[in-house]
Image (tube, rainbow, N blue to C red; front, side, top):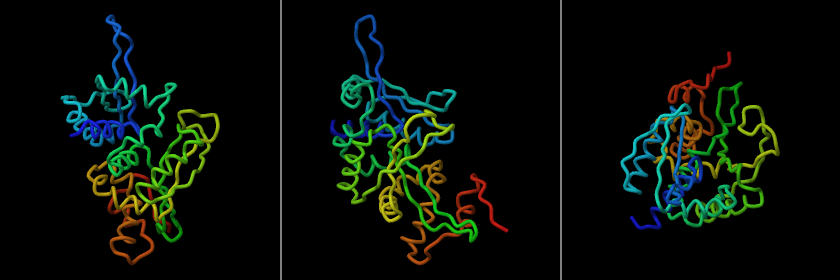
Amino acid sequence: MLRKDVRSMILSLILGDGCLSQTRPSKTGKTYGILAIQHGEKQRDYLEWKIELVNKLLNRSMTAQNHKKGPALWTTHRRLKAWRKFCYPNGKKDITRILPFITNPTMALAIWMMDDGYVEPSIDKKNNKLYSVASRIFTCSTPVVDQEKVIIWLKENFDVTPSIKFQKRGKNHYNKTGDDYPFLRFTTGDSLKIWELIRDFVLQFDSMKHKFRYIEALYQVRVIKRTARSVDLDDIVHTFGNRDGITKDK
């Protein structure tokens, strides 16, 4: 694999949940870059894939490390220090610096969606139907002024144009107070366009089959079958289980 492709894959891992940091200076005065990724126990299969990937990219033989919040990946490498300095100006991750160095946009977007994505369903509970979906990417740490750069990258690579929306902070958020934070929201059409590109890769992970159950169900009827315009919630429960407590109205 070419050096720029190795760099691209590592940077793809930090678009979402991954992060780059650095060690404190040792007695020799040297500092090292650190790649760290953590997921919940329910997404262990996804983390194991990331570990296998990093092992190949950086010639490592790592295994998952167990922590209270879930399994984690943690490794150092000489190149990570420079990448950290470039991607974290002023100590904060800047994804607009990362995107120009991505050589495989589809893979990067798949990882980004699995890390920071969400599928917002439009459900008619009275008729027990799913009618549409809207994918989101939570770009909360990216200043609003830079969100347009992300939109341009998505337009150039996937011919989709999400809109910038804002979500209010609340008691369940890491930062409970402060300004509303931005995210990118895709129309149903653009959501399905992206999903068609990444679904085969995403659905190899059992943990992601549930996360993306609504868009996969709609994709089955709108793209593959090209007949029905809605999906019975009972079919989704039958296929993906009832972890969200979906109930049928009496």
